[in-house]
Image (cartoon, rainbow, N blue to C red):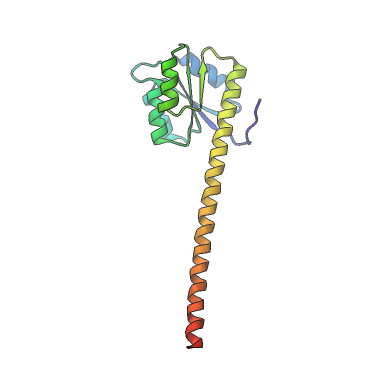
Length: 167
């Protein structure tokens, strides 16, 4: 199985069947901070309250599909890695999820514990990769700002020196 850093990532599992959420919780609770929601509305509330790194949702839920929920997650929490699962082989849902929800991974139910563990580990690694790139970009932006400030100071010094030297 793929290992991620020692950080305990937050996984939000969303399914209208509480037994599925409980099973995922029981399997992954030692490695991840597992949050559970039984509806898209509840999931979005959890996301407002916690820093969620990986969102894993069922496609078929009452009122809102997993794809619709993941589209909203992408819009409001673009850094969260999105995983969709379903017990139905609906290729249209898969295509829609990939195209509209920007899903990192699609899984078919039932999934084995090993398959689930691997999928979540890979999603957490992807989150870390993206977060690492964002940190590196922020460091570059800070360095460019520092260099621009230094350049501005040097230009001012040069202008003063040229002014003291005269024509």
